[in-house]
Amino acid sequence: MPTDTKITIRRPDDWHVHLRDGDVMRGVLPYTARQFARAIVMPNLSPPIASADAAVAYRERILAALPDGSDFIPLMTCYLTDTTDAADLAAGFADGVFTAAKLYPAHATTGSAHGVTDIANIEAPLARMQEIGMPLLVHGEVTDPGTDIFDREAVFIERILAPLVKRMPDLKVVFEHITTADAVGFVESAGPNVAATITPQHLHINRNAMFAGGIRPHAFCLPVAKREKHRLALRKAATSGSPKYFLGTDSAPHAVSAKESACGCAGIFNAPFALESYATVFEEEGALDRLEGFASEHGPRFYGLPLNEGAVALERADAPVPAVIDALGTPVVPFHAGEVMRWRLAS
Ligand code: DOR
Ligand code: ZN
Image (cartoon, rainbow, N blue to C red; front, side, top):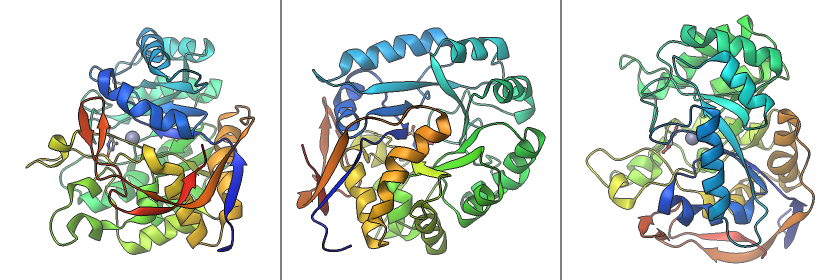
């Protein structure tokens, strides 16, 4: 549909975002709140959000930092640890504090040091989640250093996720930020209780982007981008119209100094132009008519939440992406820095 000059879709949600805390949160939150009605907020702060009290306090800080007039709703998640108590978790879900719980395998990524060291340690909370219909959000990578970093997602499916889904066939699982054809294949073969989010970066870049003419820390996130064949499988899945795939940016801001370092942090800050970025992919795939399902319908249906009222429009106009964005005193490089997007969110 290259002749389209405007696309109007139901207000979308972001089913996976890192909002951080403090000044950086105040600096980055407006970008998410401007584009999305709701967002699933990741709990990997330091210390992690691992109790209902901590989630309530964090939600208050987010709400207090919203721009005037914003009706953005943060949906909170519980960080699972080896000692998560099934009853506390279920109570937090019943009280409407937690929308879901997040599994970080210990040391898989940024802020995962308190994560789960062995899935056997959370068998009771998982069984309870299955009973009460509480979604499990999964960072799907094995962590043993013997597994090649580009194989960690595929090995996780084989060793952890497939056996889990078999053991708990009714557990609602969101396989977060999938990066491989293997993950697409797994999600396809599973029941309707297994879905996946897909980030803009994994639809746009393959692993070469990290080494284009030199080392490119701003293209590094976890799970790391894979080979081109995987990117193509993700594009096909995202634009297929299947209700199993929905929008989750994994926007993960880090200070420029923390990225451009001898040991640069994982994470891509894509919130400022997220919808524009997804729209570009859907247009390239000739699937603009499927953007609304991916961005605004499949997620709430999976979570059992109402669809948003209202609409947002993207118009055909040049939207130059700045080289750097100031997050209230912290400079952060956005995804697509220096490029010109061909769609712009109408204000
Ligand atoms: O690249 C990533 N950054 N992947 C994650 O899983 C965590 C995130 C972060 O918090 O920076
Ligand atoms: Zn994330």
